[in-house]
Image 1 (cartoon, helix red, strand yellow):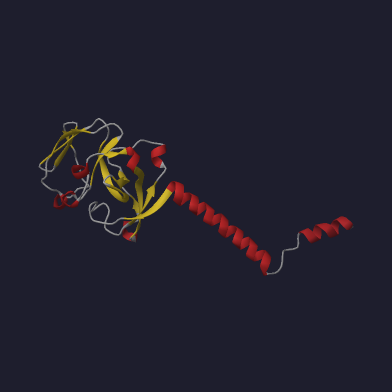
Image 2 (tube, helix red, strand yellow; image 1 turned 90 degrees about the vertical axis):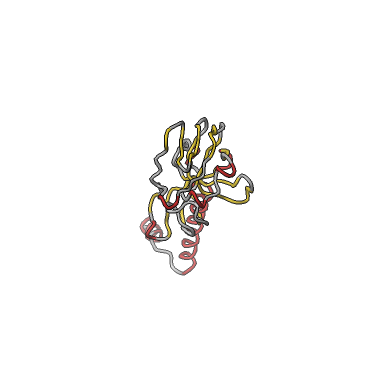
Length: 186
């Protein structure tokens, strides 16, 4: 009989506001810790400032940057990367990777050539091209040649040279604002 009484008291729900508040606070702390971990180590929300990546990314668009992906895979041609600006590391830039280490890059009247072959860039509309040329360069080891999609409005590797891998800290992967741009970036 004594056992039944003990079991019944264990199953009684806690009453009062303090137990409810402590459970709520515990859940809040756990949620904040998980969110903090994700933002610090995996995904970082970023606001695009400027028009150099139009039409792929527009000024004031909000995106997520994956800060962990390049620990698992190599940076590839076509990736949209976020990096510290080589001339002022306190600023961040976002551009598309055109050339990887060892690639020969040449731009002739706006047409980009990678290893002697014309690059098909369907992400650069005719209205955003420019006619600048750039001499043949070989992308150094541990560096990447990056260009903005809005070629006539972009400060990129044509101006500051290839970007060292140590300056690249993430890959732009997902747009979340405005809602009509919601989705995976290409």
